[in-house]
Length: 464
Image (cartoon, rainbow, N blue to C red; front, side, top):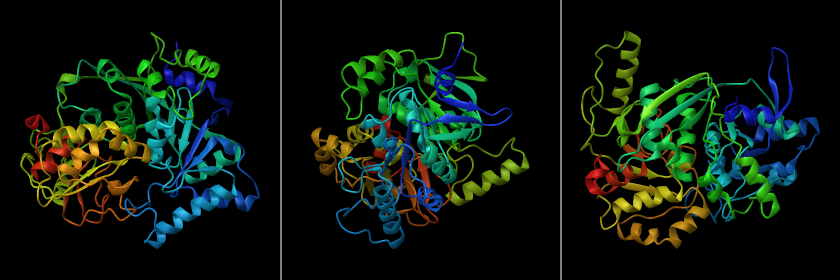
Protein backbone atom coordinates (compact mmCIF):
# COMPACT_ATOMS: atom_id res chain seq x y z
CA UNK A 1 0.00 0.00 0.00
CA UNK A 2 1.62 3.23 -1.18
CA UNK A 3 1.17 6.91 -0.40
CA UNK A 4 0.73 9.45 -3.20
CA UNK A 5 4.29 10.60 -2.56
CA UNK A 6 5.64 7.04 -2.85
CA UNK A 7 3.89 6.47 -6.18
CA UNK A 8 5.38 9.57 -7.82
CA UNK A 9 8.83 9.24 -6.24
CA UNK A 10 9.16 5.54 -7.13
CA UNK A 11 8.11 6.20 -10.74
CA UNK A 12 11.02 8.65 -11.10
CA UNK A 13 13.87 6.62 -9.57
CA UNK A 14 16.75 6.18 -12.01
CA UNK A 15 18.94 4.33 -9.55
CA UNK A 16 19.44 4.00 -5.81
CA UNK A 17 22.80 4.17 -4.06
CA UNK A 18 23.13 1.67 -1.21
CA UNK A 19 23.20 3.62 2.07
CA UNK A 20 23.21 6.78 -0.04
CA UNK A 21 20.92 9.11 -2.02
CA UNK A 22 18.45 8.30 -4.78
CA UNK A 23 19.05 9.46 -8.34
CA UNK A 24 15.68 10.97 -9.24
CA UNK A 25 14.53 12.00 -12.72
CA UNK A 26 13.13 15.55 -12.87
CA UNK A 27 10.26 16.41 -15.22
CA UNK A 28 10.42 20.19 -14.89
CA UNK A 29 13.08 22.69 -13.80
CA UNK A 30 11.99 26.28 -13.19
CA UNK A 31 14.68 28.98 -13.13
CA UNK A 32 14.59 32.57 -11.92
CA UNK A 33 17.32 35.19 -11.81
CA UNK A 34 18.49 34.80 -8.21
CA UNK A 35 19.65 31.18 -7.89
CA UNK A 36 20.67 30.33 -11.45
CA UNK A 37 23.76 32.43 -12.44
CA UNK A 38 26.31 30.18 -10.70
CA UNK A 39 24.66 27.09 -12.18
CA UNK A 40 25.02 28.45 -15.71
CA UNK A 41 28.62 29.46 -14.97
CA UNK A 42 29.34 25.91 -13.84
CA UNK A 43 28.05 24.51 -17.13
CA UNK A 44 30.20 26.97 -19.08
CA UNK A 45 33.30 26.08 -17.09
CA UNK A 46 32.75 22.41 -17.87
CA UNK A 47 31.89 23.08 -21.49
CA UNK A 48 28.53 21.28 -21.36
CA UNK A 49 24.99 22.08 -22.43
CA UNK A 50 21.64 21.56 -20.73
CA UNK A 51 20.78 17.89 -21.20
CA UNK A 52 17.05 18.42 -21.90
CA UNK A 53 16.52 22.16 -22.51
CA UNK A 54 12.83 21.67 -23.39
CA UNK A 55 12.19 20.71 -19.74
CA UNK A 56 13.53 24.03 -18.41
CA UNK A 57 11.55 27.27 -18.15
CA UNK A 58 13.05 30.60 -17.07
CA UNK A 59 11.62 33.94 -15.96
CA UNK A 60 12.70 36.85 -13.74
CA UNK A 61 10.46 37.60 -10.77
CA UNK A 62 12.35 38.48 -7.56
CA UNK A 63 14.23 41.54 -8.81
CA UNK A 64 11.64 42.90 -11.21
CA UNK A 65 10.11 46.29 -10.36
CA UNK A 66 6.31 46.43 -10.18
CA UNK A 67 6.08 49.67 -12.15
CA UNK A 68 7.56 50.92 -15.45
CA UNK A 69 8.60 47.43 -16.52
CA UNK A 70 8.85 48.70 -20.09
CA UNK A 71 11.82 50.85 -19.03
CA UNK A 72 15.33 49.75 -17.97
CA UNK A 73 15.54 48.63 -14.33
CA UNK A 74 16.95 51.48 -12.24
CA UNK A 75 18.68 49.37 -9.59
CA UNK A 76 22.01 48.21 -11.04
CA UNK A 77 22.17 44.89 -9.16
CA UNK A 78 18.60 43.95 -10.09
CA UNK A 79 19.19 44.96 -13.71
CA UNK A 80 22.32 42.78 -13.89
CA UNK A 81 20.54 39.76 -12.46
CA UNK A 82 17.59 40.05 -14.85
CA UNK A 83 19.81 40.70 -17.88
CA UNK A 84 22.06 37.77 -16.95
CA UNK A 85 19.12 35.36 -16.87
CA UNK A 86 17.97 36.56 -20.30
CA UNK A 87 21.46 35.99 -21.73
CA UNK A 88 21.86 32.60 -20.10
CA UNK A 89 18.48 31.39 -21.35
CA UNK A 90 19.39 32.51 -24.87
CA UNK A 91 22.88 30.98 -24.78
CA UNK A 92 21.59 27.61 -23.56
CA UNK A 93 18.45 27.53 -25.74
CA UNK A 94 15.92 27.65 -22.90
CA UNK A 95 12.34 28.94 -22.89
CA UNK A 96 12.37 32.42 -21.37
CA UNK A 97 9.46 34.67 -20.38
CA UNK A 98 10.96 38.13 -19.79
CA UNK A 99 9.46 41.24 -18.26
CA UNK A 100 6.39 42.51 -20.15
CA UNK A 101 5.99 39.07 -21.79
CA UNK A 102 2.34 38.06 -21.32
CA UNK A 103 3.59 34.76 -19.84
CA UNK A 104 5.80 36.44 -17.24
CA UNK A 105 5.06 36.55 -13.53
CA UNK A 106 6.12 34.84 -10.33
CA UNK A 107 7.37 31.44 -11.42
CA UNK A 108 5.22 29.60 -8.84
CA UNK A 109 2.11 31.35 -10.16
CA UNK A 110 2.92 30.95 -13.86
CA UNK A 111 3.77 27.22 -13.72
CA UNK A 112 0.29 26.01 -12.69
CA UNK A 113 -1.72 28.63 -14.59
CA UNK A 114 0.01 27.82 -17.90
CA UNK A 115 -0.38 24.06 -17.49
CA UNK A 116 3.38 23.56 -17.14
CA UNK A 117 2.85 22.01 -13.71
CA UNK A 118 0.93 18.75 -14.00
CA UNK A 119 -0.04 15.87 -11.68
CA UNK A 120 2.52 13.10 -11.26
CA UNK A 121 5.49 15.31 -12.12
CA UNK A 122 8.72 15.85 -10.24
CA UNK A 123 9.44 19.58 -10.19
CA UNK A 124 12.37 21.55 -8.81
CA UNK A 125 13.49 25.19 -8.68
CA UNK A 126 16.21 27.03 -6.80
CA UNK A 127 13.56 28.49 -4.51
CA UNK A 128 12.11 27.10 -1.30
CA UNK A 129 8.50 27.87 -2.26
CA UNK A 130 8.61 25.34 -5.09
CA UNK A 131 6.44 23.33 -2.68
CA UNK A 132 3.55 25.36 -4.18
CA UNK A 133 3.34 23.07 -7.21
CA UNK A 134 2.54 20.07 -5.01
CA UNK A 135 -1.04 21.35 -4.94
CA UNK A 136 -1.40 19.90 -8.45
CA UNK A 137 -0.50 16.41 -7.24
CA UNK A 138 3.22 16.68 -7.98
CA UNK A 139 6.39 16.05 -5.98
CA UNK A 140 7.85 19.56 -5.97
CA UNK A 141 10.65 20.94 -3.81
CA UNK A 142 13.25 23.68 -3.67
CA UNK A 143 16.92 22.96 -4.38
CA UNK A 144 20.28 24.71 -4.02
CA UNK A 145 22.24 26.35 -6.84
CA UNK A 146 24.68 23.45 -7.20
CA UNK A 147 21.68 21.14 -7.54
CA UNK A 148 20.20 23.45 -10.20
CA UNK A 149 23.40 22.87 -12.17
CA UNK A 150 23.07 19.11 -11.60
CA UNK A 151 19.56 19.07 -13.05
CA UNK A 152 20.55 21.26 -16.00
CA UNK A 153 23.40 18.89 -16.82
CA UNK A 154 21.60 15.58 -16.33
CA UNK A 155 17.85 16.19 -15.79
CA UNK A 156 18.39 14.20 -12.58
CA UNK A 157 19.13 15.01 -8.97
CA UNK A 158 20.58 13.14 -6.00
CA UNK A 159 18.16 13.22 -3.08
CA UNK A 160 17.63 11.43 0.20
CA UNK A 161 14.11 10.07 0.42
CA UNK A 162 12.11 12.10 2.97
CA UNK A 163 9.65 10.69 5.48
CA UNK A 164 5.91 11.08 4.85
CA UNK A 165 3.29 12.91 6.90
CA UNK A 166 -0.44 13.28 6.35
CA UNK A 167 -2.21 16.31 7.77
CA UNK A 168 -5.98 15.88 7.74
CA UNK A 169 -8.29 18.83 8.32
CA UNK A 170 -11.78 17.57 9.07
CA UNK A 171 -15.02 19.50 8.69
CA UNK A 172 -16.02 22.73 6.99
CA UNK A 173 -14.21 26.05 7.19
CA UNK A 174 -16.04 28.97 8.77
CA UNK A 175 -17.01 32.16 6.98
CA UNK A 176 -14.06 34.39 6.17
CA UNK A 177 -11.50 31.60 6.71
CA UNK A 178 -9.13 31.08 3.78
CA UNK A 179 -6.36 28.63 2.90
CA UNK A 180 -3.83 31.12 4.31
CA UNK A 181 -5.56 30.90 7.69
CA UNK A 182 -5.40 27.09 7.56
CA UNK A 183 -1.64 27.22 7.00
CA UNK A 184 -0.99 29.84 9.70
CA UNK A 185 -3.16 27.87 12.13
CA UNK A 186 -1.23 24.65 11.48
CA UNK A 187 2.07 26.46 11.98
CA UNK A 188 0.86 28.02 15.23
CA UNK A 189 0.16 24.50 16.51
CA UNK A 190 3.09 22.58 14.95
CA UNK A 191 5.71 25.39 14.97
CA UNK A 192 8.00 26.21 12.06
CA UNK A 193 9.94 22.98 12.60
CA UNK A 194 6.95 20.67 13.10
CA UNK A 195 7.25 19.02 9.69
CA UNK A 196 11.05 19.02 9.31
CA UNK A 197 12.24 16.03 7.31
CA UNK A 198 8.77 15.18 5.99
CA UNK A 199 6.90 15.46 2.73
CA UNK A 200 3.34 16.40 3.71
CA UNK A 201 0.12 15.29 2.05
CA UNK A 202 -2.91 17.43 2.96
CA UNK A 203 -6.25 15.62 3.19
CA UNK A 204 -9.73 15.93 4.66
CA UNK A 205 -12.98 17.69 3.81
CA UNK A 206 -11.62 21.22 4.40
CA UNK A 207 -8.73 20.60 1.98
CA UNK A 208 -10.96 19.00 -0.67
CA UNK A 209 -13.29 22.00 -0.51
CA UNK A 210 -10.51 24.41 -1.46
CA UNK A 211 -10.26 25.84 -4.95
CA UNK A 212 -7.07 25.23 -6.91
CA UNK A 213 -5.82 28.67 -5.87
CA UNK A 214 -6.45 27.86 -2.22
CA UNK A 215 -4.60 24.56 -2.53
CA UNK A 216 -1.62 26.34 -4.10
CA UNK A 217 -1.53 28.72 -1.11
CA UNK A 218 -1.65 25.83 1.36
CA UNK A 219 1.17 23.89 -0.31
CA UNK A 220 3.20 27.08 -0.76
CA UNK A 221 3.45 27.45 3.02
CA UNK A 222 4.51 23.82 3.68
CA UNK A 223 8.12 24.92 3.67
CA UNK A 224 7.38 27.31 6.56
CA UNK A 225 6.65 24.29 8.79
CA UNK A 226 10.05 22.88 7.86
CA UNK A 227 8.56 20.37 5.39
CA UNK A 228 10.49 19.28 2.32
CA UNK A 229 7.30 19.81 0.36
CA UNK A 230 3.53 19.57 0.45
CA UNK A 231 1.02 17.96 -1.87
CA UNK A 232 -2.66 17.30 -2.46
CA UNK A 233 -4.05 14.35 -4.43
CA UNK A 234 -5.45 15.52 -7.78
CA UNK A 235 -9.23 15.31 -8.21
CA UNK A 236 -11.97 16.85 -10.38
CA UNK A 237 -11.05 20.32 -9.10
CA UNK A 238 -7.51 19.76 -10.38
CA UNK A 239 -8.55 18.29 -13.72
CA UNK A 240 -11.02 21.11 -14.42
CA UNK A 241 -8.36 23.67 -13.59
CA UNK A 242 -5.80 22.12 -15.97
CA UNK A 243 -8.08 21.43 -18.94
CA UNK A 244 -7.51 23.79 -21.85
CA UNK A 245 -4.46 25.50 -20.39
CA UNK A 246 -1.66 26.32 -22.80
CA UNK A 247 0.77 23.51 -22.02
CA UNK A 248 -1.83 20.96 -20.89
CA UNK A 249 -2.20 17.73 -22.89
CA UNK A 250 -4.90 17.74 -25.59
CA UNK A 251 -6.85 15.12 -27.54
CA UNK A 252 -5.84 11.53 -26.95
CA UNK A 253 -2.90 12.68 -24.81
CA UNK A 254 -5.42 14.31 -22.45
CA UNK A 255 -7.39 11.09 -22.08
CA UNK A 256 -4.23 9.08 -21.41
CA UNK A 257 -2.96 11.62 -18.90
CA UNK A 258 -6.31 11.85 -17.14
CA UNK A 259 -6.49 8.07 -16.73
CA UNK A 260 -3.03 8.14 -15.08
CA UNK A 261 -3.79 11.17 -12.93
CA UNK A 262 -6.84 9.43 -11.47
CA UNK A 263 -4.52 6.76 -10.01
CA UNK A 264 -2.56 9.42 -8.12
CA UNK A 265 -3.90 9.09 -4.60
CA UNK A 266 -2.73 7.37 -1.45
CA UNK A 267 -3.99 3.81 -1.18
CA UNK A 268 -6.68 3.27 1.42
CA UNK A 269 -4.38 1.42 3.82
CA UNK A 270 -1.24 3.44 3.04
CA UNK A 271 0.94 4.02 6.09
CA UNK A 272 2.49 7.44 6.71
CA UNK A 273 5.44 8.00 9.03
CA UNK A 274 3.30 10.53 10.90
CA UNK A 275 -0.40 11.45 11.00
CA UNK A 276 -1.75 14.81 12.26
CA UNK A 277 -5.40 15.91 12.46
CA UNK A 278 -7.06 19.29 12.91
CA UNK A 279 -10.70 20.42 13.03
CA UNK A 280 -11.69 23.12 10.53
CA UNK A 281 -14.15 24.64 13.03
CA UNK A 282 -11.22 25.59 15.29
CA UNK A 283 -9.73 27.88 12.65
CA UNK A 284 -10.61 31.57 12.47
CA UNK A 285 -8.98 34.37 10.44
CA UNK A 286 -5.35 34.42 11.58
CA UNK A 287 -2.60 37.01 12.02
CA UNK A 288 1.03 36.75 13.10
CA UNK A 289 2.47 38.80 15.95
CA UNK A 290 6.13 37.73 15.90
CA UNK A 291 9.09 37.20 13.60
CA UNK A 292 8.47 33.72 12.25
CA UNK A 293 5.33 32.35 10.55
CA UNK A 294 4.62 30.02 13.49
CA UNK A 295 4.02 32.99 15.78
CA UNK A 296 0.40 33.39 14.75
CA UNK A 297 -2.99 33.47 16.46
CA UNK A 298 -6.69 33.83 15.76
CA UNK A 299 -7.39 37.48 15.08
CA UNK A 300 -9.75 37.78 18.07
CA UNK A 301 -7.15 36.34 20.47
CA UNK A 302 -4.37 38.01 22.46
CA UNK A 303 -0.63 37.52 22.12
CA UNK A 304 0.48 34.63 24.39
CA UNK A 305 2.21 35.36 27.69
CA UNK A 306 5.57 33.93 28.76
CA UNK A 307 3.94 31.80 31.44
CA UNK A 308 5.26 28.23 31.33
CA UNK A 309 8.04 29.00 28.83
CA UNK A 310 11.58 27.78 29.49
CA UNK A 311 14.33 30.39 29.61
CA UNK A 312 15.54 29.91 26.02
CA UNK A 313 12.02 30.08 24.61
CA UNK A 314 11.18 33.12 26.71
CA UNK A 315 14.33 34.97 25.62
CA UNK A 316 13.58 34.30 21.93
CA UNK A 317 9.90 35.22 22.38
CA UNK A 318 10.67 38.50 24.15
CA UNK A 319 13.28 39.44 21.52
CA UNK A 320 10.72 38.87 18.79
CA UNK A 321 8.04 40.95 20.52
CA UNK A 322 10.55 43.70 21.25
CA UNK A 323 11.34 43.90 17.53
CA UNK A 324 7.63 44.05 16.71
CA UNK A 325 6.87 46.61 19.44
CA UNK A 326 4.25 44.38 21.05
CA UNK A 327 3.66 43.16 24.61
CA UNK A 328 2.83 39.63 25.83
CA UNK A 329 -0.89 39.22 26.47
CA UNK A 330 -2.08 42.20 24.41
CA UNK A 331 -4.69 41.94 21.62
CA UNK A 332 -3.89 43.11 18.09
CA UNK A 333 -7.37 44.18 17.06
CA UNK A 334 -7.43 47.95 16.60
CA UNK A 335 -3.64 48.29 16.21
CA UNK A 336 -2.71 50.94 13.63
CA UNK A 337 -0.97 49.71 10.48
CA UNK A 338 0.98 51.55 7.78
CA UNK A 339 1.26 49.24 4.77
CA UNK A 340 -0.82 46.50 3.16
CA UNK A 341 0.63 44.08 0.63
CA UNK A 342 -1.53 41.78 -1.48
CA UNK A 343 0.51 39.45 -3.66
CA UNK A 344 3.49 37.03 -3.66
CA UNK A 345 3.56 33.37 -4.71
CA UNK A 346 1.40 32.81 -1.62
CA UNK A 347 -1.56 35.08 -2.39
CA UNK A 348 -1.08 36.74 -5.79
CA UNK A 349 -3.73 34.72 -7.65
CA UNK A 350 -7.13 35.73 -9.00
CA UNK A 351 -9.03 34.26 -6.05
CA UNK A 352 -6.97 36.43 -3.70
CA UNK A 353 -7.90 39.58 -5.61
CA UNK A 354 -11.55 38.51 -5.62
CA UNK A 355 -11.44 38.08 -1.84
CA UNK A 356 -9.71 41.44 -1.33
CA UNK A 357 -12.21 43.19 -3.62
CA UNK A 358 -15.18 41.60 -1.82
CA UNK A 359 -14.13 43.39 1.38
CA UNK A 360 -13.19 46.80 -0.09
CA UNK A 361 -16.21 47.04 -2.44
CA UNK A 362 -18.15 50.20 -1.58
CA UNK A 363 -15.50 51.31 0.92
CA UNK A 364 -12.42 53.55 0.72
CA UNK A 365 -8.77 52.93 1.45
CA UNK A 366 -7.90 54.35 4.86
CA UNK A 367 -5.90 57.57 4.89
CA UNK A 368 -2.28 56.97 5.79
CA UNK A 369 -2.22 53.37 4.51
CA UNK A 370 0.12 52.58 1.61
CA UNK A 371 -1.29 49.62 -0.32
CA UNK A 372 0.61 47.53 -2.85
CA UNK A 373 -1.68 45.25 -4.85
CA UNK A 374 0.54 43.08 -7.03
CA UNK A 375 -0.80 40.35 -9.36
CA UNK A 376 1.26 37.17 -9.44
CA UNK A 377 1.37 37.20 -13.24
CA UNK A 378 0.16 39.02 -16.33
CA UNK A 379 -2.53 36.34 -16.67
CA UNK A 380 -3.85 37.28 -13.21
CA UNK A 381 -3.68 40.95 -14.22
CA UNK A 382 -5.81 40.17 -17.29
CA UNK A 383 -8.34 38.22 -15.19
CA UNK A 384 -8.62 41.12 -12.74
CA UNK A 385 -9.56 43.45 -15.59
CA UNK A 386 -11.87 40.94 -17.33
CA UNK A 387 -13.85 40.52 -14.10
CA UNK A 388 -14.01 44.26 -13.42
CA UNK A 389 -12.14 43.93 -10.13
CA UNK A 390 -9.83 46.76 -11.21
CA UNK A 391 -12.82 49.15 -11.23
CA UNK A 392 -13.93 48.08 -7.73
CA UNK A 393 -10.38 48.53 -6.44
CA UNK A 394 -9.89 51.89 -8.18
CA UNK A 395 -13.16 53.26 -6.78
CA UNK A 396 -11.94 52.27 -3.32
CA UNK A 397 -8.67 54.14 -3.86
CA UNK A 398 -6.35 51.27 -4.75
CA UNK A 399 -3.99 50.94 -7.72
CA UNK A 400 -2.83 47.66 -9.28
CA UNK A 401 0.90 47.29 -9.82
CA UNK A 402 2.74 45.16 -12.39
CA UNK A 403 3.50 41.48 -11.68
CA UNK A 404 6.48 40.32 -9.61
CA UNK A 405 7.52 39.12 -6.17
CA UNK A 406 7.30 42.75 -4.99
CA UNK A 407 7.25 43.38 -1.23
CA UNK A 408 7.52 39.70 -0.28
CA UNK A 409 11.24 40.25 0.08
CA UNK A 410 13.47 43.31 -0.09
CA UNK A 411 15.05 42.53 -3.48
CA UNK A 412 13.28 45.23 -5.48
CA UNK A 413 11.92 48.75 -5.00
CA UNK A 414 8.91 47.71 -2.90
CA UNK A 415 10.41 47.94 0.60
CA UNK A 416 8.57 48.67 3.84
CA UNK A 417 10.41 51.39 5.84
CA UNK A 418 11.96 50.72 9.25
CA UNK A 419 9.49 50.63 12.13
CA UNK A 420 6.42 50.56 9.90
CA UNK A 421 3.76 47.85 10.23
CA UNK A 422 2.75 45.90 7.13
CA UNK A 423 -0.18 43.50 6.96
CA UNK A 424 1.14 41.18 4.28
CA UNK A 425 -0.23 38.21 2.37
CA UNK A 426 3.31 36.94 1.73
CA UNK A 427 4.93 33.94 3.39
CA UNK A 428 7.64 35.17 5.77
CA UNK A 429 7.75 37.72 8.56
CA UNK A 430 11.43 37.45 9.51
CA UNK A 431 13.20 40.54 10.80
CA UNK A 432 13.87 42.84 7.84
CA UNK A 433 12.29 40.47 5.32
CA UNK A 434 10.25 43.29 3.72
CA UNK A 435 12.92 45.92 4.27
CA UNK A 436 15.46 46.75 7.02
CA UNK A 437 13.58 47.29 10.30
CA UNK A 438 10.16 46.56 8.75
CA UNK A 439 7.52 44.86 10.89
CA UNK A 440 5.43 42.24 9.08
CA UNK A 441 2.10 40.74 10.14
CA UNK A 442 1.19 37.80 7.91
CA UNK A 443 -2.48 37.42 7.08
CA UNK A 444 -4.99 36.34 4.44
CA UNK A 445 -6.22 38.62 1.62
CA UNK A 446 -9.45 39.25 3.58
CA UNK A 447 -7.61 40.30 6.75
CA UNK A 448 -5.31 42.49 4.61
CA UNK A 449 -8.32 44.11 2.93
CA UNK A 450 -10.02 44.80 6.27
CA UNK A 451 -6.86 46.52 7.51
CA UNK A 452 -6.53 48.50 4.28
CA UNK A 453 -9.97 50.10 4.60
CA UNK A 454 -9.98 50.64 8.37
CA UNK A 455 -6.31 51.55 8.91
CA UNK A 456 -6.14 49.15 11.87
CA UNK A 457 -6.06 45.39 12.39
CA UNK A 458 -9.67 44.32 11.91
CA UNK A 459 -11.57 41.04 11.88
CA UNK A 460 -12.85 40.86 8.27
CA UNK A 461 -16.00 39.10 9.45
CA UNK A 462 -17.11 42.42 10.94
CA UNK A 463 -17.17 43.91 7.43
CA UNK A 464 -19.24 41.22 5.71
